Length: 41
Image 1 (tube, one colour):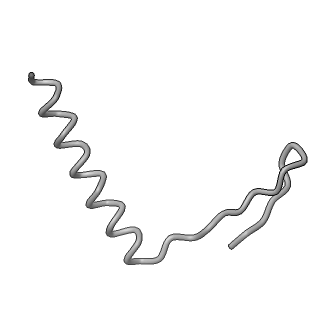
Image 2: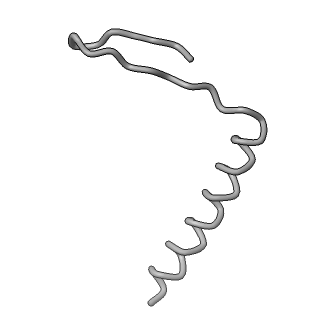
């Protein structure tokens, strides 16, 4: 976790794990397919 001050507010940033990257990639594919289906309707 990294901390950073921006506009007098503390912000926290977290690194994704390898598993987290995989889950995110799968979700992107799923949402892309849903968006494509919605556009065809």
